[in-house]
Image 1 (cartoon, rainbow, N blue to C red):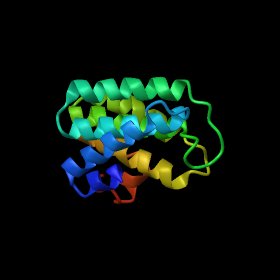
Image 2: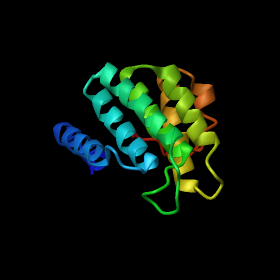
Image 3: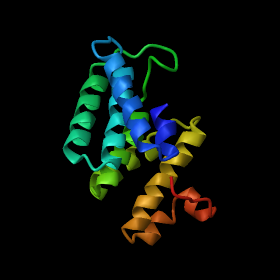
Image 4: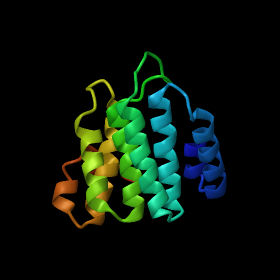
Length: 153
């Protein structure tokens, strides 16, 4: 719900929901779920300009993901490429373009072939960051740019 609230620019509500999600997963055995809620809170905190808190949440999400014992199912497994995509959002918001590019490149390039929608979203976000840095030729190799389908994400 925090993801949706953030998309609707309901920043305070997104922060409350992200905090609640993190609190509800503290001590849980599912490291993947903890990684997801922490990286989402990092994105919310980055939007709020809370640089240090956002970076701490990213580090914590990486630790949780690193010790995750992924099972089957949508809420028990968080792929590394999904974490990388979300991880790219916070540094991008904070102005750390290099960290954002590294995470987004991984998210775009390492997606399994069957994850077409997720690959397209990763490619589009990567292209936007490249365009912001004035790297038009490099950005134009990404499908979203070629199709004219880019809009702020």
